[in-house]
Image (tube, rainbow, N blue to C red; front, side, top):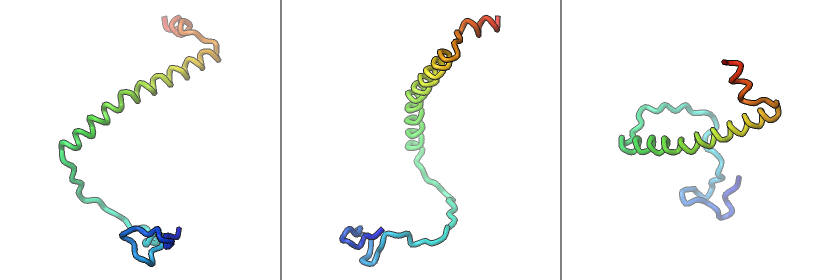
Length: 85
């Protein structure tokens, strides 16, 4: 990747190539993560609300797959119910 054709980023020098300056792996240890409580609560509320339509979509997909399998195998739900009664 060559960025010397006038497409340099503002923070890059004239001799920058865009390649990584690190050759090996450098271990990173995170010692602290500061997230305000309200922002964390808001994130979990959003995630919970996003899970509702996702669960509905997954349920519909599973129902369609189950119906397709029932059509292919020729089974009906009454056969399963009769076995348990």
